[in-house]
Length: 374
Image 1 (cartoon, rainbow, N blue to C red):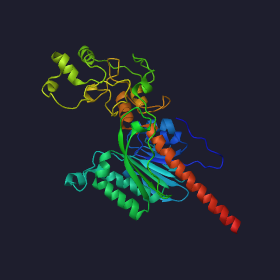
Image 2: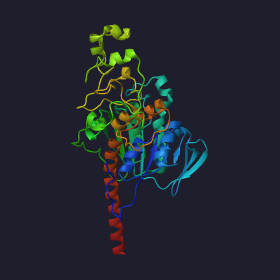
Image 3: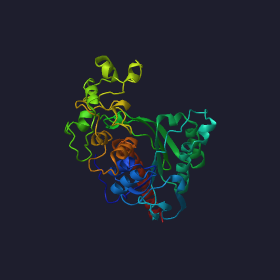
Image 4: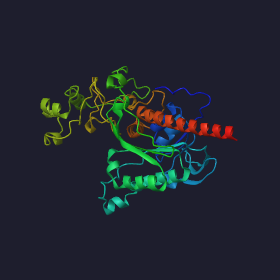
């Protein structure tokens, strides 16, 4: 992935990231030439990773505790920095606002129970839209689970953005595998624009596999650069050996019922990803936060008898090896699994950048015509 070249007449566009995590979206936008200027992330370890990679403009605070006091030349954010110290950050104007509000609380359209209505996670998108309303970015992007687009929350978001704030929306479900990511990962993407409709980015012809992403890494983890080994029990190793590429727990049940967990023996049907092994020639399944546990999904290495390492998971999420993660292995795994694949964010960013540059050129042309007419 390379940052597209820009001529001297094209200004840098800025990005703010809410619910930033370690910065998967921000990294994709940075590689597309955007300048990150502010971020908000409530998890202290993810905020620390963001700080390490992008600078000290990240606030380690829940978004509901962050106040956007006014919009003049920039924003005034009151909160704490990643070290917990009080801080006020003055930023330039925000061109693009991005974010993925936590998704666990979304409910089917028109079927919200009292508990769901009171779930604070259902209200976080409102905090995001309040920032949109206050700072009025040229473009905003919301990333979430596909179920969002069938929820009551989405209908409210859509009405507010279109009818109250005059944004044109494009939305749909994108699969990261269709954008050069070696992973099947379906995400809802909403793009709101005040510069004319910005459609979702077209799919690419690039297809990448697990081998493309991690095939050059040593089969035996080195213990360095997040290529960290686990210490499985002897029984776990024997279980791993029973699962062929593309296989799963049913291969273990058939070959070695004597070492198969009883709960699996008593459940002859179910997910085919559980205790599954990846295949070199295919993309990986969705990388979630507990990819280091084979019982959680298809997370066994295609060849080695072990689950994938932190480095391999980061590669499958298309983070560059130079990206620094802060925290213990479990905390880093959470950051990796929660991230938007960098390559997917990059494609979205390039698409938005083209629209921003076109709008800027149009404005410059109008200024030139007005100057000549004067």
